[in-house]
Structures are given as structure tokens and as C-alpha cells.
Image (tube, rainbow, N blue to C red):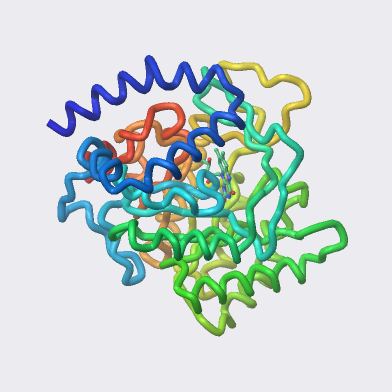
Length: 354
Ligand SMILES: Cc1cc2nc3c(=O)[nH]c(=O)nc-3n(C[C@H](O)[C@H](O)[C@H](O)COP(=O)(O)O)c2cc1C
């Protein structure tokens, strides 16, 4: 019965809801969706109806134990959809095994000038040029605490951006800020894990922590956390040659996993849409799929069980999620699939993956 409801939901989303959203600018559509989610999740009955329609059903074969944290299923939301952790109860209702909230910084960050997003409808992709806007850890902590009672057993991962806060802010102080945020997450039990985002391609900082020397510095600071917690590193989408050098460094430190991967900046991929002049940023969705799968597979082969892997990039169906798991991912996270295919995708993938 639930799979029939999900099939109908997919058709309704594709043919009625998405065309309406896609008439709006992607920035407005994103704000509207977050608004609808935050308002509707306040009502217990709404959460229960959504859950009955789209989530689960829970099955023991879907459960994952990662660093002692129990995930009811391996499908979740990648960083960037809910930057300020305002929609966690809604995301729990649609059946997420986990949500990666953020990326968050120590202080409020306004991000780049808008528009932040550009849709490539035929290519199943969003070009993101947001520059890590978020309200800062204090407000995000408040949001998490306010919603804590309504997220069931869903796991929360908080993404921490390691980024210079403003011009003149050094890479050293970016590390200090990130460490302060991580100590806060762990000490105040804001999340079950931290995902350290070293790879935002649109923060206008040349991603210094994707360089081996700077990554080493950052990870040495993470090794010394006073309040340790499971740590994942959000990896850049790079060639295996460059990627492997970062993995070699990560393996020497107190890091439990890697999230593969962030947006791609490659413009060499065959796209069905043309990117207008003046549109900058990293691409999400289908253009990320193949590279991410390759990096997951090679990382698993190289590291065996030494690192957990969250597979991210271009998951548009339950079958795509299975491809990531078969390539070696322990968990799968997505954003673009939600935008292009609808919210029933999470429960569908959670139900179908092995
Ligand atoms: C709207 C949007 C905002 C994003 N913001 C962040 C972010 O703040 N931090 C981060 O680590 N990744 C961010 N990402 C990248 C995603 O987490 C993910 O790596 C990428 O979109 C590939 O997954 P997808 O194909 O399922 O969308 C963002 C992606 C999108 C589409």
C-alpha cells in the first residue's frame, strides 16, 4: 500500500508540484519549501500523516551501526539543504535515517550576493553559488534543541565549514573557529557526528584545506579536540590522483569517515542545458554521479574498513542509492534527488536498498 502511495506521490510531484516550483526562481522555491516544512511540522497530525504516506516501513536489514551510532536506515540528507537545522522534524517524518544540517560556522555568515542557485532542469542539477550562508552556531544550536523532541531516532550530523569568516581572517583562525564549533557540538550534544566541510567550491577562498599541507594542520587540531566526537571529512570532487593524497593524510588522523563528494566544478561534463554567461558555482545532481561513484569505489578498495563512507552525488532513485552502496558507501545522502524527484524518494530508497 505504501509503495503505491509513493508511486502516486512521485507522479503528482513530477507532473503538478515540480512544474509549479520550477516556475519560481530556485532561491524563492527553496525559501518557500523551507517555510512550508517549518510551519507544517509544528502539527503532530501532519507529521504522522507524512510519515504514514512516505516513510519506512522500518526493517531490521536497513539498520546501520556507524561508530556506535544507530541509523534506522542508510538514506539521509546531504549538507546544505537545511543550513540552519530548522526542518529536522519534517525530515524525520519523510523517513530520513539521518540529516546533515549546516554547513555552519562560528558566527553568522551572510553568504554571497543572490541569486545563490541556478537550475539546470534537463541535466538534473543545481548550480550552487551560496558561499556557505548560515546563522552561526548559537542560533543553529537553539534550533536543534527546540526540535529535539520531534525527531524520533533520526541521527543528526552537523556540517562544520572550515572557511575564512571575512577578508583578513587567516586560515589559522578558520581552524580555531571550526574547532570551537566542533567542541560546542560535542560538549552540548548538538549532533551525533560532525562532518567537516573543507570543500565548498563557492566560498571564494580557493578551498585551502583541500591542499595536503593545510589539511594536515586542520586534522592535527581535530586530533586534539577536548570533547571528541565521530568526524567525517566532506571531500572535494577531484581526480583520484589528487583525492588519494588527501585520503593518505586523513588515514593518519582521528577521522572516522569521509563524505564523497561535494559539488563538482568541472565544466567538461556533457550537459543537456547551457550554462549562461555569468553563472558561477559548483554543480550538484546527475553531473556528480559517476565521479562520486568512482571515488567511493577507489576509497573503499584502498582503505578497506578503516574509513566509513557517506556516498553523495546524483542520487535520483533507489537504484542510484544502491549503486553507491555497491560501490562501497555505508550511508547515502542527497539533495538534488529531493528537488527533482520529490520527498517520497527518501522512504522509497530506504525501503529498497540492501
Ligand atoms: C542547494 C545546495 C546547497 C549546498 N550547500 C552545501 C553546504 O552548505 N555544505 C556542504 O558541505 N555541501 C553543500 N552542498 C553540496 C551537497 O551537500 C552535495 O554534496 C551535492 O549537492 C551533491 O549531492 P546531490 O547530487 O544529491 O545534490 C549543497 C548542495 C546544494 C544543491
